[in-house]
Length: 446
Image 1 (cartoon, rainbow, N blue to C red):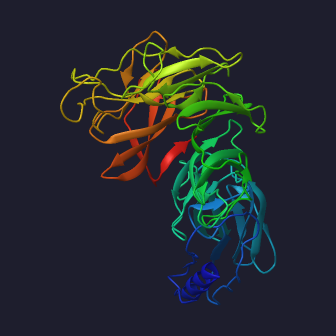
Image 2: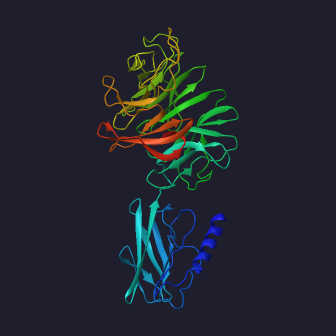
Image 3: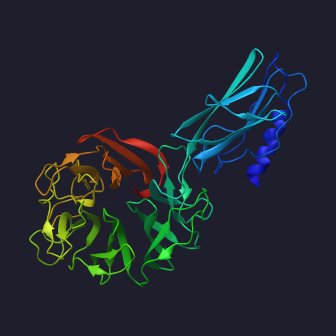
C-alpha cells in the first residue's frame, strides 16, 4: 500500500507539468524498484490537447528497476499516428496512441531500454536502465540484522545490481540465523540457527523476492539436537556433501553428511577445537583449523594451525603449515578460516604484524586481535604464502567465489566493531585492491 500511495503522489505531480514550446516531455517517477515484468500499472494520463508530440513510458517507469523475469513488456502512450521504437525495433501502437513492445529480453546487467517516438518533424527519446535478478538463485549470501525485527537473518545480493539485497530467511520470532553456505548450484543455503538457546543446521531455498523477511519459503531443519553448537558449514565442490564443526562433548570436531542430511560421519576426534572445514576441489580432502599440538599428541595449544585429512576412507589429520610465528618475531599467531577456491587456491586469516598481547611465556599468551590479515597460497602443502590484505583492521571470514573463470574473494572488514563486506579480484595469481561492496553484514559466501 505504501508504494501505491507514492505512485499516486508522483502521478499527480505529473499532471501538473506545463507545455514547453511545441513538445511536452513527460516522465513519470515513482519511489523504489519493483519486481516482475509485464504491463505497466497505473492510469495512463491523456495527452495535452495542444501537444504535437507526446511520450509517456509507464513500464519501466524508473531507472534502476529490478525485474525477476528477464522478459518484459515495455508500454506507454504517445500521440496518435506517431511511430514508436524500442531499442530500434517497432512497437505496436493503437489508435489512441497506446504502445507495447512485448517480451523484450533483458540481455545484460545493466540493460538500457531506449524508447523513441517520431511524428512529422518531431521526435523524443526516453531511456531506462533496468536489471534482471534471478529470484530462484543466490549470488552472494551473508548475515545481517533485519531492520523490522532486530533479529539476524540471511540475505542474498547481486553485487552487480544496486540495492538488490533480499531476505532469504523465513521469519521465526527469536531466531538468529548466521554462517550461511551457498551450494554450487546456487539454489540452496545451509545456515546455523540459534533458537531457544539451542543451535541446529537448517537449509532454505533461494527462491523468493523482496527485501523484507520472510521472502522465501520455510527453512528445513537438518539436525535436531540440544546443547550442541555448530560452526562453519561448508559444501563440497560437487555439492554432494556438507562438512561442519560441532561441539558434542565440549570440544569441536569435524563431521560430514550428504547433501540430503544422511550418512553422518565423524571425521576428526580430538580434545582440541577442530573448526572451519573447507573441501578440496575433488571432495576427497577437508582442510580445517585446529589448536591441537603440532606433533599430533593430545591436549591443546593457544594458537591454531591449518590441517588436512582424507575423508574416504577417513585418515589421520596432517599438519599443513609450520608453526605460525608472527612476522615481528614475537609469539605466535593463529591461522583461521581456511577456504579453497574451485581453482585450488587456499586463503586464510593470518598476521601481517602482531604481538602476544602482553608479556611472554610458555605456552605464549593469545595473540592480539590485530592478527587478522588475509594470506593465500596457490600451491600446498609446499608453497609460499602471500598477503592479500594489509592494514590494522580485522579481515575475517574470507570466501572464494564459486567460479573457475576468476578468483575473487569476499570477506568482512571489521573497523571499530562495524562489519562491512569487501572483495578482492585477482589477476592471475596477483590480488587487486580491496573494494567496499557497500554492504553491512557478516559471514559472507558466494
